[in-house]
Length: 302
Image (cartoon, rainbow, N blue to C red; front, side):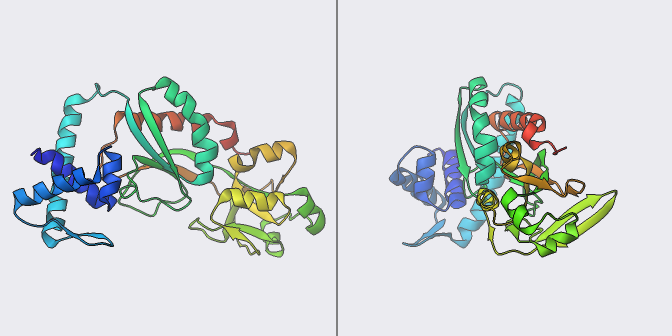
């Protein structure tokens, strides 16, 4: 038995919580994964996994063995990386996570150019407006906008999301246009509810900070849904410039409060803490960082 390979499979089964998920990841069958783990348990002389029809859980011995396996595999990976540094090819599977809107509008359109430069890479782009668990989802890297709450992750800043306050002409014609952040309190404001700031909109003018609690009759966890509400004349939104860049050019929305700078949000590439970033991961993050810094739709509105 290849014990190191069996340990790696055991760790992946624990992290994914599923034999079948690991089988798909390794392009093999579920019985094969089960056979490897049974052989590992036989070699060790005890049960690692307490199997049930509903979920997979570890025995006490399995939990200790899992922690030790992770340390061993990390040490092996580090040794290989040290030996192969500078010689690793940019190829193989690359599993990327992102919010739906950012992934659709900012990542997906840039994949053709990246893959043209690195044809040996196979991309799997997973979009979800909830913060994805990198380990359980098997992600190599995910892109997150806003403050990071999980200190157990490795994060690299790759850009900035500048934001603007927008409304449709029909909304402003009916309700008037606010001239100061304080006046937003009298308007129907649409909330993107996944940010840690919640309903607090923060602006700055002449080194003075303005923090306004907004209210409205609609909210969503998807920024493109907020965009559709704005275009329909429902209310005012504080949103990324890149989400409304084409609408601003076409006059479908109007940027309001132009003298006040809305609080911007950082964009991070986030990695699992215990997994080395491969050459393909580093290449893609470098590529996205350069692309985001020069993208006109991510620059502040003048």
